[in-house]
Length: 152
Image 1 (spheres, rainbow, N blue to C red):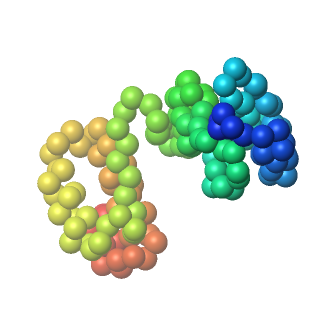
Image 2: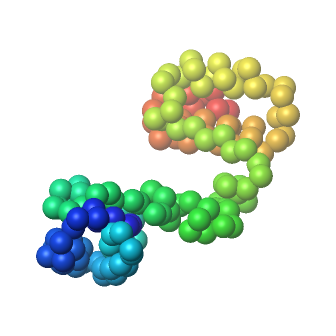
């Protein structure tokens, strides 16, 4: 984060901003320029609430340098995150993964309808196997006792 001070900011106002940054638990690095002073906030691992700094006298602008959610962005880590499940399913790779569960299905009729529409379409594909596994998991969880018969 970069705090840009107004060109008329006093030394006391700059010192107050530096003190506030340190109170927040970060390091402050003043960068004096010809027309104004900028203060770099160093050490933040995520988004910092800039409202407290913006309210201080002499502050012209607060600029967020890093992206929000940088720890899950490509800026933080360029290689993709791939999670491999015990059954060999890879989430995060090139293949599309279809997941379903009690929270994503509203009724037994809905899941059976989806299964019937998908029937005959690459039944041996990994996506079809995952749909069958998700349906079975819902049935075993007791969401729809009658659904256990349909899973057979």
